[in-house]
Length: 613
Image (cartoon, rainbow, N blue to C red; front, side, top):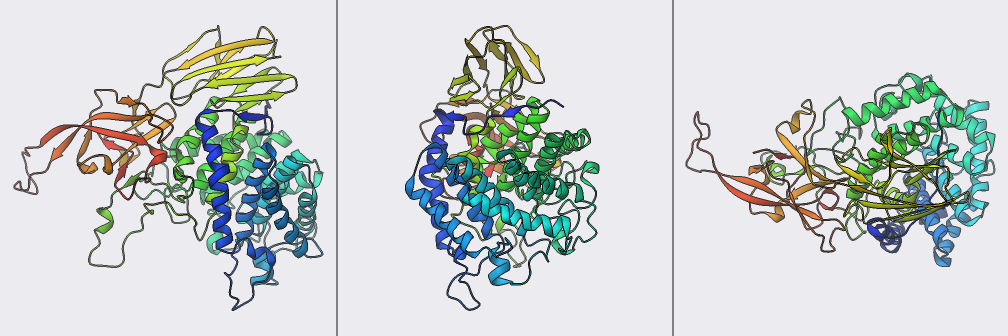
């Protein structure tokens, strides 16, 4: 089993371009905005443990611990890059309250202490271990960023209690968490500060899943929480998408840590099932709101797509872990699709509002069709919100964007891999790598390697790329352009053709038969009705001409497109049905914007998939 070492965000700085702007907005706007909303809604106040029945403050929810934990993790990433006394003081205050309210045996959970006292480890789907997982990840990030171990030492006490309860005493009412997360958090903690306890407990939860004689019913149906069969036998992605991809991330960690080829084989098959049969062109996963779940292969409805932001983040996490143990460009391709589409669409352009769901079509008229009943179908919302009742996605976005540079580069014994293209500088073990590029505005990438004589540089050849150029001799290995590094100061220039192209779906995706989507490089585009007088339902895409590229005016950070189309002209005098219809069309030009930017200009119809002329 080949292993790579991904370079942490601590070793890689994004120095400019699209993602530097996104990280600055995240730091200056989004992280403060999430904190303000969490203050307003009582999430931070809940850590005071003052709530009582009838109290004049919001009742804590059983996943509020995790919301704040992810915000702390985001803050830690920013503190690692630049000192900020005020931000660090906010984090330290939360740590103070965790220490103050941790029970003598190490237990900490707000809801199970103040709302449902005496209920610890009794309900599989009440997120205790999920919350611990996010608190542990935050503690590790804070330790790595600041060198302060108080938070991590505090979480160690809780981990020790969980080990005693689940592994030694087996006294809990269930054997594995209903919502996976603690597994990957434990492996992360083990890498940061190796304690065998971390690894043993993570291994236990992975190995025990699917063999759980104490699994509970209700929402934690075995399929819903991937507890139906042992993990090494799982080959089909089922159930709640975020839970599933967090589990698969933990399984990939297990395979890497333990050298388990059988586990790796299961991970490969699960990745194939997700990305070849159950993933939208935008990278979104989860085609139904019922259980926020996977359904059957090729069931990918556009207007009712659930495609939770957290699910896209979770799939990117899984893909990045697979890349470490199975270096293949298809994993980095999926990550790229997510970061430019399925993940980024969850955040407004101003950085202050969020989508939980990310549909691929909005038809406002269809939402008004049930005029004679209040029993209307459920549709995704059409405008981003600043906070949700279940607000897991906003701090998940802030932590992902803040640490994004950790997705870019991995190193092996002889190889240096460049997975994602952004201006950056990376340093490790005497080797320095810099990347200069304006990607994805254009496809030119210049890589300079210092101190790498005798190594090989492996640059991903994106799966969407049909033509490329390179200024040095190379081979292609598992989707990577492979160059010898002949000296200690070598530069390499690669050009990827970003000509827009039309995408068609597998014909088994019934909703998209006869339709096309448009992509330029990694960016998927959509049409919004605000840009045309015609109903998008009457627009037909002309695929004979390549869409025209319009330089960005500073709005989106990437170009917009204009495509040739025609518009069907309805005839009010024609019969509803006709054996010989006289269809009149008029030529038109249809503007397209990046999918990640939809719903930023008011409520309007939107489509990714357009019917072909």
